[in-house]
Image (cartoon, rainbow over all chains, first blue to last red; front, side):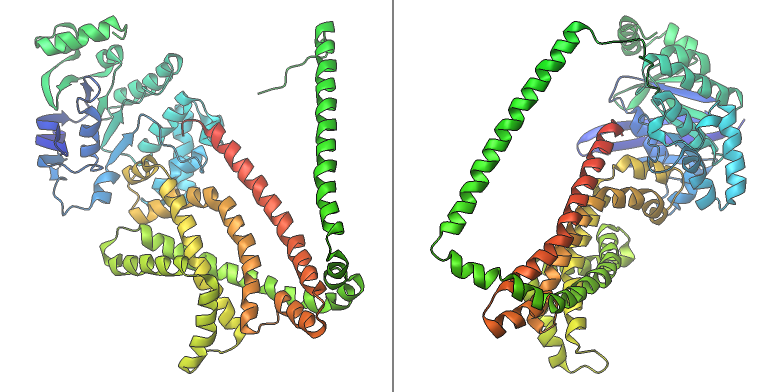
Length: 248
Length: 288
């Protein structure tokens, strides 16, 4: 099994604030790596660095063996190999659901409109959103919008999918439909890195759970090890607080 | 969302009483508004007609017969203003879009152009339009360049286009900057280049947002085309001026003013409505 993503000693700071501190991580093909940790522990920044939306201060990032942290690399080419789903959906409000999904396949991958539409409609059907193809995003519920955002990132056939707290902006009833969609992707063998606050969900999909604390992974292992039998006192403390909030 | 059926419902006696109260309140408000309007407008009219010079003003500014006589020449002039507005407006749209894109680009190859665009906007937004008209109208012919028309209508239009392009560029740029960075992040993460992101994601949303302020600028443009009269273009203002100075009767000015208002008032009403619709649409957009 080869590693799709390899992070080596990543360091990133915003001004004087160190956000990622000497962080290393390997993500093998067809696995899901779940990042947990308090807000501000660096989960979102890590995902944005992988996507090259942020540049790192030191260390290396490899995607399928290519060093993508090299400043000479074409960032557009790299992003074509990655999918990203955001906490706040970020659908394009002036485009219909179908147009949101087919924009990149048509403009970036130079597919014909028919070809892109057929593929998009198939994905919509799979995620039970066929009847929403011609709607504008603001007519959809939050859960539907987020599922469209997931489809949009899948439409470019990414090697690696990055999901940044995809359920945090949703009310509890809608969370489930999005998590079901992610679970389906996992069983299809999609390689994923997720930041999440849903510990129960982490247990279900994670091949590896990483606990981030002040910019580094201080505990990692299977969901069972990290979530149910943590060794590090800080992990224990965090999980205790999550438990008190009723999120585990 | 479907309207709920309420055919079986008839208002309770309490609701009927409330409706009567509401009607009573609105009747009272209407009578206060009417009384206040009659008082204020009546006072203004009274001040006007009892002023010592009213009789002279009436004959020199509101001479209906003379107004009818000069009407054809003034409206012929207004046609020039309208042509200037539409041809100029098209040119302004293209140039302003280019300037706005140059000012928001980060491409290193375009650095000198970005600098020039900024300087251009600073100069033409900061200088009075009438000075630009005079400088272009009299300065360009003085250069004696071959192939450059010295037609005053052309030069006047160029001056107006130069100035308004700077105004409109700033409006479009503010629209571009108002699009949330997360939209750009989403587009870039899908592999779109920065140019594609601007063209397919940012600009369509930005333009939609700035349509109401642009309509405002369009109304101003129509009025400001009257300034080209100082170059000797026989537009509505100039036509009125010629007639007024011939007879020392200023009714032609009033005629020109009324003609401008007949066009600009419906346009501003339409603009206000567009702004209102835009605002309510934004409010319903919620978190996005």
